[in-house]
Amino acid sequence: MSAVANGPGPEVFDVVVIGAGPAGEVVAGRAAEAGLSVAVVERERVGGECSYWGCIPSKTLLRPGDVIAAARRVPGAASAVTGEIDTPAAFARRDEMVGGYSDEGAVPWLLDRGVTLVRGRGRLAGPLRVDVDTADAIQPDAGTPAGTTRRLAARKAVVLATGTKAFMPPIPGLADVEPWDNRSATGATLVPRRLVVLGGGAVGTELAQGFRRLGTAEVTIIEGQPRLLAREEPFAGDEVGAAFEAEGIAVRTGCRVTAVRRGDDGAAPGPASSERRRPPVVVTLDNGDELTADEILVAVGRRPATEDLGLETVGLTPGRPVTVDSSLRAVGATPATGGSGEADGDGWLYAIGDVNGRALLTHMGKYQGRLVADLVAGRRDAAGAVPVEVAGERLIPRVTFTDPQVAAVGLTEQAAREAGLPVRAVSVPTSGVAGSSVRGVGLVGTSQLVVDEERRVLVGATFTGQDVQELLHSATIAIVGEVPLERLWHAVPSFPTVSEVWLRLLETYGL
Ligand SMILES: Cc1cc2nc3c(=O)[nH]c(=O)nc-3n(C[C@H](O)[C@H](O)[C@H](O)COP(=O)(O)OP(=O)(O)OC[C@H]3O[C@@H](n4cnc5c(N)ncnc54)[C@H](O)[C@@H]3O)c2cc1C
Ligand SMILES: NC(=O)c1ccc[n+]([C@@H]2O[C@H](COP(=O)([O-])OP(=O)(O)OC[C@H]3O[C@@H](n4cnc5c(N)ncnc54)[C@H](O)[C@@H]3O)[C@@H](O)[C@H]2O)c1
Image (tube, rainbow, N blue to C red; front, side, top):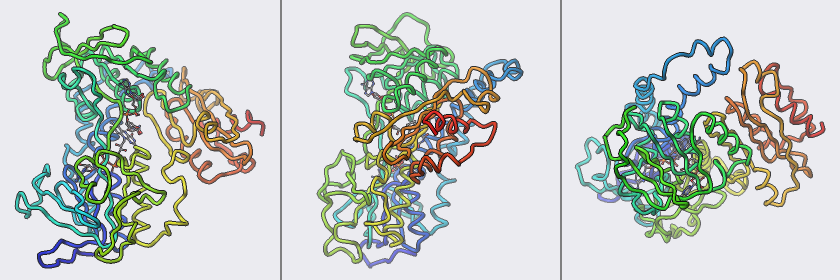
């Protein structure tokens, strides 16, 4: 399991992974469990974006508002909800959930599996080679002299798992106002009084509602597309937009920001608690309107962390996602001829997680990590065992944790039609079953199945509503398992659960 020291040469491992976010951690741990020697290179924190500035802090900050909103829908409980959210307690819980921004709690999982953690910036240095700049680490390795370059070599594979960074669009003045990105927003210690959110995708919608419910008085979302969550079923964005408007979040769709500046609007600086009393941000829209806020959160997508990764040393282009084939192997990488041994000449470089641009979701990165670990360990045959659409849009489950939530898997109706599939969509209100009524009053949402009429299997499903996240896996199983409708009909949902929407949907379809 341990690295072979080759005199003054590189430290040799079976597998070298760059990046210890969710994808990198999983591939490293699983490859080590299969008996391979593994090094993982990380320049920040083991756990990556998800653990410290993504999934975990955002969902933790959303939780207090969700619980209160759910209680307010229950006659008898609603009257017991008095007072305000205790924001210091919510932030303290966030801090606890991110381990105080330390990876002390995450590292043992790797070490227990015999993985060697190398702190520093990893760069490819030709096929099967990775150089690590140990000076470029937020916490240096104990025992490694500062500024040392550690040279690593892989016998079998190098796996890129370097993730993404928030994209900052080139809007005049935007960079000068020091806008929030996902890191500053999920790491906030105080609540701005007024917040503009640029981008109505997953990050923008979740955090807009999160801050509104934590006490931000004025929240405005600006989205370039005609609706929020534009890649989901149209009803999903419409329902989220309506719910937002109802709770005082202004939604401006189909519009663009043309300029941003910090200036004095004459208003008192935001009390709920502006962290630094910075002058307000003034945002100019393409129709000439101006919005004033204490902070602007930019949430318009991500860019792959491949600028400074040595991609050029293996024939690939820096700054772009690493294109992979269905076995998650980098397409076009220089073959590893004459390398240190067992690597398949063309198949030594893999890219998993956000960096390959296929599905920017933790669970999909981890799934890709499991697949690659198995391929490299010889547990799986690249040609046969990896589903052709691995990480392709046909199988991706996703949940946007707004209220109402949007939980979807597979294709939207429109995407299925564009793919040439003969589909029919059926939908029912999520609140139309007893399981929903017992959860409270005034619940909203829609459940929809997209059925391939020729094969009589599902190719897509979307559920919107309160707490629909746990409904999603049933649809994922039906789609991945290609369960025929006639068989699905015999999967009887318990009473009174929200899963009874399955029964209503199949009845509506005609079964
Ligand atoms: C606000 C927010 C909320 C989100 N919520 C969810 C959610 O609820 N559910 C969900 O599934 N997804 C969510 N995501 C997406 C999720 O965070 C990402 O899909 C996931 O983190 C990607 O994992 P990864 O391992 O590919 O990359 P990352 O998590 O980005 O990790 C990459 C790691 O590589 C390291 N690294 C980069 N370059 C180098 C280098 N050259 N050398 C050494 N180390 C390097 C980085 O320091 C980092 O630790 C959210 C994202 C955001 C921004
Ligand atoms: N719950 C979750 O699973 C979750 C939560 C947050 C993020 N994520 C992941 O992180 C990824 C990144 O999230 P994101 O929200 O940053 O990106 P996104 O691609 O999901 O949404 C970005 C939005 O910004 C809009 N936009 C782009 N440029 C714009 C401009 N100049 N003006 C106005 N609007 C503009 C786009 O139309 C889009 O709707 C997502 O794709 C998702 O996979 C997942």
